Image (tube, one colour):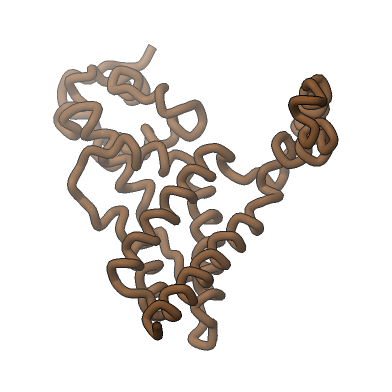
Length: 238
């Protein structure tokens, strides 16, 4: 049984508490993080933690800020790159770096602090790309908001990439795909003729490994922004 120190506990700091909380959240789930659980982990009473974190929300805020530290979407940028190549690289960087921060999106949603600098670095990076491409500042701000929403939704739905998925995981995915295909084939053909006819391809897309579509997602966003810029420039000329 751990020794309970009613006074100051050696090594019990705000940074240590946040680090342990992130570890628990990453290995189990965010719901598993609680002040009572952390007190037990450190071998102290819950009151000892309140010297370092005010409450659960303060802990969540600190976790979110740490989780987002060091996010840099400009890794691999070269001066010779076109704005579309920079944007594509930035989006790929975002996915790679968020994979290293599995709790980041959940913590952003739960964040209740006011340290905007902890989250604004990637926005600043993409804003610079869009402005250099020729978007108006107001349009760039709107488009960043749209892209951010789409990326957050994708990553929350798909979860972290798992390039080294084990064989059992691949078997489970194939079973899911087959069940999905059978479900589509069971639909009334006269009501869903397109879906029934294309059941195999639809099942592969909806139940197959979602990471396969990440590069297509990036292409869709980049091509869409290119088209919007052309449309804007055409409107200015007219």
